[in-house]
Image (cartoon, rainbow, N blue to C red):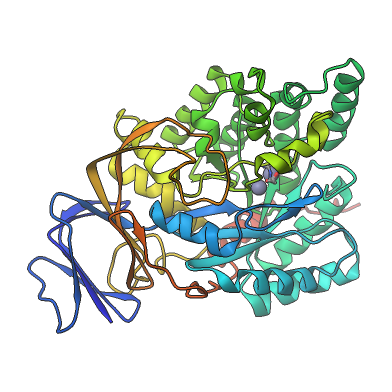
Length: 479
Ligand code: URP
Ligand code: ZN
Ligand code: ZN
């Protein structure tokens, strides 16, 4: 099976150049001008279009059991929606309930994900601690291609990870050569603020952002960063929504610490006025954590992305329909937290990043694909259009326009946080594993065609950390 992408302009993170791209048996086998199509090849006319590595969304939650319900997009519909927007890989999360063996939870998520139509991988959350967790982390890294562990510093009495568990897990990750990731919000503070706000009679969705101010996020981000600094482990802070957490990351990076930051398309483009909408359904549809913030924070996030202190963009795709959000009709604390966007991330970032001049096209590729591939150690298999890479490619029509709507999107949810936004620049074709799976608005996907992607443990981050540690080795005082 061969696909020749003809007449386009390749945009990688490092450069832009005119070339045809030949894909055979799932891989890119030639990149160059004037390539001939082998017999039987499908030819995609990319004239006037850009040929870029498919987007990688490093933060999704397909069919996540959460807050008494299950996220409405499953691994089939969610990965298909991603392909329709040019995203060819997701990194989802295994989230074990406390006291469940993490290896058992991992197997469960692997089973759920078998229906995926695009490639996927898993971060594994550490929600509790005992010797089995210590052992299973080793098995996951050594035998199952997991190189990242997630820690929820919020969601008290559910999946929250306390500092003791954080320290145990970070220490173990360091031994294994894995990276730690955190959802940074002080869960104890959120719990207290939620109660205070609810007791004051604020029961609607407007109570959600009031209970999760930016300081709550900044404190947790800084705490995780400092713990990671002491334990000498690389850290990735997910869904930064505010100036305070960005400042903590920037400070640490300026001090030479290996810390990475992710920002969601939603946090860049949707502001906190949505929570003051008098229609419960609309306000509740936007309830996610951390919440959408004011323009001041959005501007800071854009600057962080432009400056390189935030390296990746994601969606935290975790959809709940109106009937699920209604679980919190009388108490905002019971509104399932989460919103969608896996289908729209690339187009909204092109519209508001590239078309406004905030990002170059190469920077766009870097923050939607390449940096994630590099940080999570799957580069150059993913994240670049080059010979030998997986043939996961988006052909991007910079002239095509559309207006985003829940009425027409492919995500399995009845709301779209980008509803009504007109974008110019969209995927005309998506190639996944060497096959054209999306062309001119139509999906042609095969249930189960997505593959699990192994991510090996890190050598380079740890070599650097070890060299640094050697210089800083403590010395006993001779008495
Ligand atoms: O509100 C959110 N973000 N829901 C999904 C779980 C998480 O915190 O990432
Ligand atoms: Zn989170
Ligand atoms: Zn999440």
